[in-house]
Every structure is written in C-alpha cells, then in structure tokens.
Image 1 (cartoon, rainbow, N blue to C red):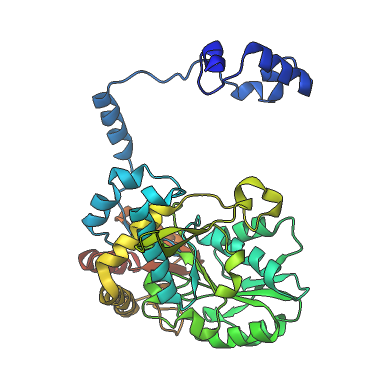
Image 2: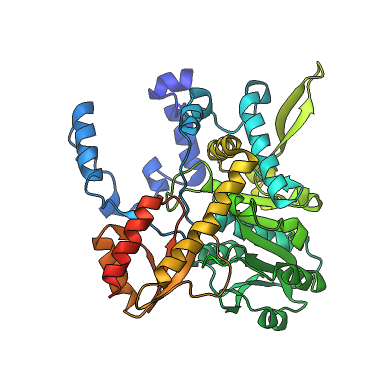
Length: 445
C-alpha cells in the first residue's frame, strides 16, 4: 500500500527510491531509456478521438458497418459458417462464462470444466483417438504444434515434414514459422486430381521423413481415398501421420484412428462460431502415447472428497508459463469460451443432427455441381471425386471476370485458377443457391 500511495497507481507500486535503484542496476537514467520507440509512433498525449455519447457512438459504428457489401458468401476453403442455434448465444453469453479466464480453480469452475470435458469427449468419439486438447488457436497453429510434436516423439533422425502441394498458404506459412529454429524442413508432395498422388508420395517418403500430413476433405472439397495407404507409408518410415479435418466432416467420414492417424488437427469452430476469417478454434487430438507431449491443456474427470464426480485441469504443462526453455509448446491462450460454444452447438444437434448436417454438405454440393455443369461454358466439378461441402468449377471465360460479375450481383466465390473458381454450400440457404445458379447462367454466357 505504501508503494501505491507514493506513486498514485496500484499497478506500479514502487517508490521513487526503488525506481532509482532499479534504473541504476541496469544503467539507465530514466524509464523512457528502457524503450526504443520511433518518434513517428510515439504517443504525444492526444488520441485525436472526438468524445461522443453512447448514442452517437452507436450511430457512427452502424454507419461504418453499413458500408460493408451485403454478399452471399460461397467461399469455404477452411472457413465455414453454419446456422448457429440461438441457445448457443444465450447460454454462452452468461456472465460466469464470459468473465471466466483459465479454469485454474476447479472448485469454482465445475460447470465450465464439465463443458470442456464434453467438448474433448466429442473429439475423442469423432476421431477415435484417446486425447483431445481443449485450447488451441486455430487449424494452422494446431498443424505447427503437430510438427514440433513429431520432432520430439519420433525416434527417427529425420527432419522432413511432408505436406500436400495445395495446402492453404496461411497454414503453410504458419507451419514454416513453427519449425523455424528447428532442424525441420517443410516440403510439398504432389496431388493428383485433388487428392494425394500416392505414387509420388511413396517416392518422396524415406527414413528422413518425420511427419506426413494429409487432409480429408481436401482444400478443394474432395474426399481423400488413400488415407490408409498414407498411414501405412508413415508406419513404414517411422513418421508421424497427421490428418486435417473438422467435426462436421468427421461425423460421416472414416474415423482417423481407423486409418492410422497419430494426430488429428483442424478447425473445430465449424460448430458454434460464425464465419470470421481469422478467429477459430484449433482441433488437436492424439493417442494416449503422446499424453505428456500435448500442447495446451486437458480437462479430466475425478472424484472429490465426498465421492462426487469432479472436473479439473488434469494436464497443463506449467513449463509453458514459467520455464519456457523446457516447454513442449508456448501456446498459453485460453480458447475455452470458443470450445464451450462448439460443445453447446454439438450438444444441441446431437449425433443424428451432426450426421444430417454433414450429409447435407455432400448432397447439396453434388446437386449444385450438377446444376452448374448443365450451364454452357461450365464444367462442375473439376475433380472426378466425391465432394464434401465445396467443389471447384471450370469456366470457359477468365475466372476473375466471372467472380467479379458474380460479386456485382451479390455473390462471393474464390478464384483458384485462371479458369477455375471454388464454390461452397455451407451455410447458404436453398433459396440463395437457386438465385446463385440463375445469376451464374447470366454471367457465364
């Protein structure tokens, strides 16, 4: 209290004498000498923000947001928005959830911890792997964590991390950042008609490979048919087999454990979050063999002193917080609230509801592809494969021109080649899909 009174701030409780002693110890005259901030960005004491009332501020924000284009998004490629039941917002917005940080004190966090336990249980059931993490940033960082885990747990002296040549640029660059400073090297292997080129991967894989990564569904929406063979390749070369997917897709696809996956990564925010193109929830599940190597934290179930079921943070490697040189990971974020929303959305759907939602992703994509394929100058889908949620379309006209014309008429699609666009049906109503087909017919002429 003495220090805070002396400084006038409870956040810097040091007396003038104490500050002087600390500055002398580091050889600085003033606290400003500890920082090297370019003059152009130094704070000059003024924010240059006009004071406004709450009503005026709301009006300003509403006018700014009103300038956004009101487009029907058929974008996909790693970001998927589904209808979120209103109960998710109503329950997740309760104060005990919104104000909760990491659940270090289980005695006051039982409800939240139980929800996280249910989230983990959902991922365990979908993947067939025994351990699921409840706190990761997004799919890209989950992939990076899988690579560094592979380096730690594999006996091989290898250093090659093999990924598909069509891996999303953001995920590839994040992976590159994660392995910087290690001996790991990220290399791409070829794909064929959207899926793994098994012969090329077999030729590229050797004893130097420490990790093989594949996705199901792929970035172009195709269902990967060679997962068991990829798993066998990984085993033969003592590499870790990492599979990318998401909870909705996993509701109808082969369980990763059944095709030999050691780790499953992806974005779990397909449930519980709207499309945000940045904010996500990293899915990370693995086998019990790697329990002590899992980044982030795990919630476990036990019993209290009165034999009642109780939940607690079973594993959260403290080295991540206080001894970073010994850390298995430096992920310390708290994605618990996002995981809570995912668990709530999944629970509201139930097993049958999740399967129905996934099957609609298959049938609606197939139906839309057939309708587009009937148009003059259009071929859909490009890949002769089964698809989930999205697919690539070839157009005779330049793809950027087609996408631009569609945007002017209220529809957003990805341009993925000179004559290729990608279309995703997730979260788009049947009525808007009908309008999209009509509009596509007009712009493709």
